[in-house]
Image 1 (cartoon, rainbow, N blue to C red):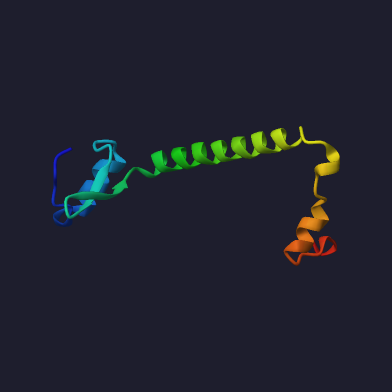
Image 2 (image 1 turned 45 degrees about the vertical axis):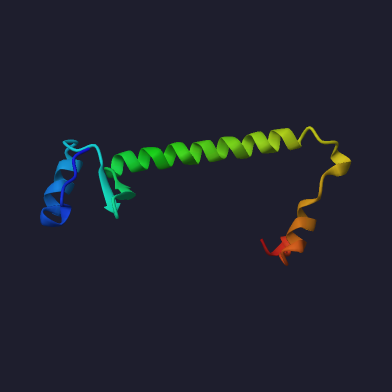
Length: 90
């Protein structure tokens, strides 16, 4: 990826990014990549994929824990009480 002094034409670079003429903009500090600017649609897609993956992981955790015998389960109201939450106030 070519190095560009973006401070001279930041708006123009954002326009190119929006029109898919640039894939990404790397932000460097001391010749190290500190951040990457990507189009909002790509960010939203990545965020959606991450959220889906996170829900998938939660589902697998719950599914695995359901294999434990019920007598080892901790009632939800006990967990809420531990955090000072009364289930009647939910």
